[in-house]
Length: 98
Image (cartoon, rainbow, N blue to C red; front, side, top):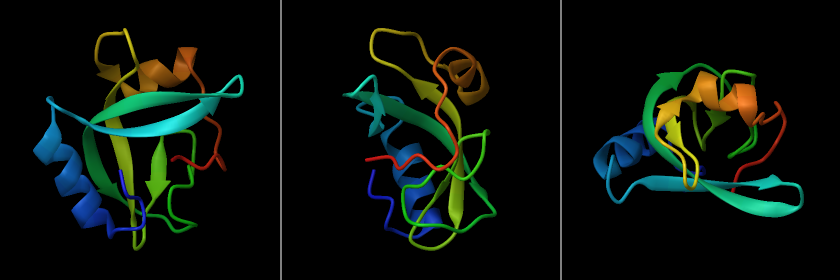
C-alpha cells in the first residue's frame, strides 16, 4: 500500500483488491518484516507522516487524511477484524508501516 496517496485513494485501493489478491503492508515484528493484508478500511480523521499508525485502533496516516483498517489477514491466519488481530499481534501507535 502506498500510504503517500490521499486517504480516499488508499481506501479505494484496499476495497478494489479485496479479498484477492489483496492490498498489503509490512510491519516489523521481532526484527523481521511481516506482510499483512488489508481487507477492509474506512476513511478516518487524523494526520501524521504517511504510513504512521496514529492510534490503537489501527488508523493509518496517508498523504492527506487517514484510513482505519477494519479487517486484516496475517500470513497463515484467517481473516479477522483489526481489533482481534491487535489483541494478539499489537502494532503500537507511532509505528511506521511499509
